[in-house]
Length: 262
Ligand SMILES: NC(=O)c1ccc[n+]([C@@H]2O[C@H](COP(=O)([O-])OP(=O)(O)OC[C@H]3O[C@@H](n4cnc5c(N)ncnc54)[C@H](OP(=O)(O)O)[C@@H]3O)[C@@H](O)[C@H]2O)c1
Image (spheres, rainbow, N blue to C red):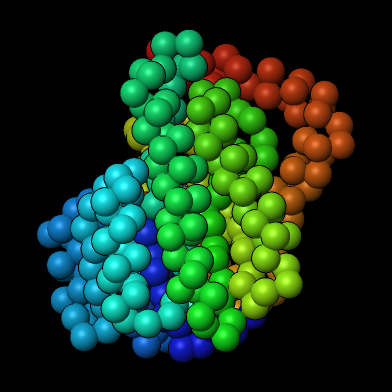
């Protein structure tokens, strides 16, 4: 679906995938609001992409005050037609000994922040003739994987939120969509995750590939995008015959445990 020119809000814009999205999206934006906690990185991004067009809001999205500042900045610019909830964090860890503060942060960052930011921006998105909300999920939101229990909870929650809100807004011009990158070479993946991906032979994309896929997704109309045919089949299999992936992943456990922080 086309929302060109974009009047866009992008969270996690200083991260690996977010920065690549900002770079490829900015030329088709009338204005772009970028958010992250890193003020210096945001300033550099604004300089690079054009301070006239790009506006930065620095702050922690798990903080209500930051959400209010994002909404105020957007209201000043007008009606947005694109919100990309991309900010996120990971924590590959054995669940039993995972730090409770990290679990809270995972759910606050990956699930609660996009939900509450969406709620804040909805009245403004409604003012655009057509708009889209794109939530950046993960394959682990479909397929539970050892070492990612809390992350999977956050991303499957985001998937459920996306689908329910999409249906709630089906009679409005606001599309609510779900974009899933493949494993991508960024800072969200610790050295242990990189080692796990190597061990499992998981293909890892460059951030620019993920951004290019997201731009193609924005122009299309599917409500969600899985990374590829193989991943789409895995999701189907996991849903229809979960015993099969249970068995396959059980076989991978010794290799996973070798890298999983305890
Ligand atoms: N890379 C992958 O393999 C992969 C695969 C599937 C899905 N994803 C998803 O893709 C999205 C982007 O991830 P990435 O790989 O680009 O990770 P990244 O390089 O670590 O970037 C994460 C971004 O989120 C921001 N962020 C994190 N916590 C925040 C908070 N509390 N408040 C405000 N901003 C916050 C970070 O900015 P600051 O730290 O500067 O605030 C950064 O800009 C995430 O939702 C992730 O779950 C990634």
